[in-house]
Image (cartoon, rainbow, N blue to C red):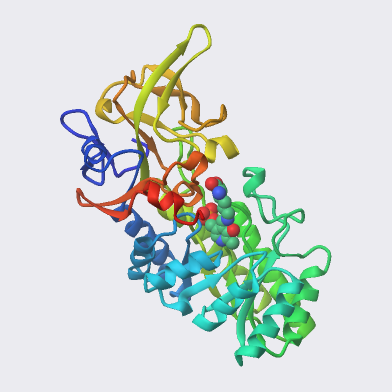
Amino acid sequence: MLTPNLTVSENGTLCIGGADTVQLAKEHGTPLYVMDENMIRENCRGYHEVIAEEYGGNGLICFASKALSCKELYRIVDSEGLGADVISGGELYTALQAGMPAEKIVMHGNSKSDAELKMALETGVGRIVADNLPELKRLNGIAGELGKKARIMLRIKPGIDAHTHDFVKTGCIDSKFGFALETGEALAAVQAAFAYPNLELTGLHCHIGSQILDTEPFAEAARVMLGFMDTVRKTCGITLPELNLGGGPGIRYTEKDDPPAFGSIVRAILSALKSICKDLNFPEPFVLFEPGRSIVGGAGLTLYTVMARKTIPGIRTYVLVDGGMCDNPRYALYGSEYEAMIAGKAGMPRSERVTIGGKCCESGDLIGENMPLQPAEEGDILAVLATGAYNYSMASNYNRNPRAEMVMVKDGEARTVIRRESYEDIVRNDL
Ligand code: LLP
């Protein structure tokens, strides 16, 4: 099985976290996102343990909620001692509504509005990661008006090429995010931040990309960032106390993938950090990490109903389902591969190769092509695996399809954590 939380029951059906997926589809309808709470919690603890063991607990894990933002997720990660990374007023609002303490929230964004910056300051967000000079100026002004000092970090592009999809690479000079090191832009930004009276620069941030399957680019980013903190110390006479190394550890989407365990990535980063601190005689900074995918990705799957099969002789067989790019746009966007199975035939070999087509009015609306699958018939329940990250959070109402329900499974019991949208929800803002 792709992830350890998946099992096959005695009657040959796929189970996640002890819950029978065919039964879940029957009770809740499809498309249905299913998340496994125990696995999410184990992943949170896994991150915590490494920081405790390798770094004396001198850090904070902020769940990157762009991977999956809903109230229950914030409650779960908060109860495991994690904070949250938010990228918009909407994510911030959801986190606060769920009771996530504001000081454990990191606010991101390369185009934050004045309203979002004000919201972050008023609610007492722990750190705002500033992306560009106009933002620094606006933030200083807004903080002044509110009589507050904004705790900020600066987003730096460390110039590391992590080998991942071009769309999710962010650490190189040609990226819309942050300040470049190579050009001197980053040092100028640090100096600008120090000069603003209403900003308190606590440290630096970088995020080199997502779904990264090697350890070395992370360790290299840590070395580069620490080297730059040393440059800041020498040039400006200030020792920055915090370093945020973003997210990015990859997960297993298909049986071909063999990513390093996130624990070994974090260990390698911390060990690189400790050794460079020693070499430079630099005090070990408080570290932040922002993992998203590696906490929730493998903990979720999506259930669909097979509506039809269409065989085009000599070309391919389509298996058509009742969802698609509106609940999982990742194949259409990035060509991301998934494993799928017929939930009620999980014990049988996947003897066919099919294209899974969605219900949207778009030829590119596919979940995948050339996918091994058990013989699929109308009415079967199809499970697409490892959809816990960047599926619900990237879902849309394209073709005015209501967004799907999400259930959280714990020890075999399921509870709804996001209701299925209704047609009433769909027209709510239409005048
Ligand atoms: N921190 C920052 C500043 C980020 O930009 C991201 C992801 C993360 C943390 C979390 O990265 P993770 O641990 O989840 O890899 N929609 C794409 C992924 C975009 C990721 C953007 N930033 C996908 O579906 O693959």
